[in-house]
Length: 478
Ligand SMILES: Cc1ncc(COP(=O)(O)O)c(C=O)c1O
Image: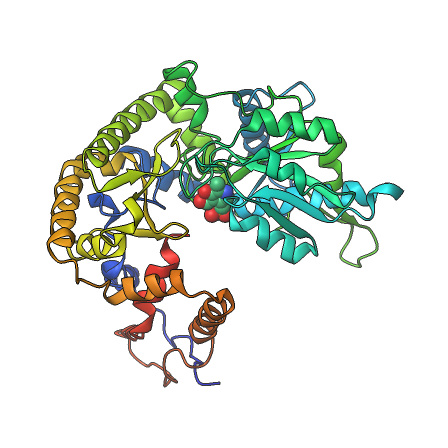
């Protein structure tokens, strides 16, 4: 095995370990300077320090069994209750905390599958009907659970087309799913119509509010009437996923999955009784769970309070409006769909000039650019740390457009060529097998070199292979 390594013979002093990690971080995206437009959900340095202190407090606990650590159990139940209140749940609303959006989505599908299997007539139900923009986590979950996703085309505003979804409903349909909002364009699906459809067919409806769950309620409070109802106020909505590690501002690794009632949730719990190690009962997917994400989510909610969330939301919605107005003032650009919060995507009209040439230009200026396809576009999420950078971004964007306009022969370069190619290749299988190969390279023996047993304390990390840079960029938008 070529990439076999040896654990250092002697431990290093704390300062050396920390210095080594600091050095490794030097190539990471400079999010604090507002150069990234996704992934990092930062409030301010004070909030970050609170999360760090909280993590220190719960570094040792293992939350494998929800009865094992009373403090974490209390915090988990507290957060679930507050999420149910925020999303207009009923008295019966119940849920669990998971490790993130993907786990919440996976468990929602699993729970509905188990619920359906518990009745004779539900056994053949194995299909999920959702719009094209639904997050890939649903496809991953369906793949793992032996279910099938049937995707309906979206409407002209990048929203779920409920009439198209209805056409895909068959006796095999297990559930419907829509987003609040969908990640690519920040557009809220017509959840009211989806709720009516679910009720008409007697199907469960999951609302993926992983990104919007802790944001839309504040936007609605600040701008009454701007957000149509999408949560448990709608009678057809049976479950919602809302991530505390996104706009809840906890540290990474937490989400809330709520069901309208225990009727569904009880099918999520896994219990086995004949293991020699004892009775094993697990409410979610993971076994041992870190207590840290739950504790930091709890700390975030309690230190910010409603007023804190409203203040941050006001700031970032104002910033987003400024950014949007700046983009709309550029005649070549168009905003896709109808963004309902602080997420938007823009494209050039008929891709002229090529949006990826513009993306290249922005990257040259040090911006981390999230590229999207179908249609080619650039994705932005406005966070607190982006606010001071908006003016500079718009200036660079105008320059990028002028450059692309004056150089019509310019072709997307570097990573853009790869992205552009990836987006244009007609055979999706080729893209998928290329990315699979990259994963094999990353985790396989081709990565790194065989190491000799280190003797001193001054080991340097080997430099990452060159291809890792573009793979990281490719994957960073997920
Ligand atoms: C709408 C939506 N659903 C699900 C997810 C997946 O969440 P996670 O990355 O926490 O697994 C995301 C992530 O951005 C998202 O935006």
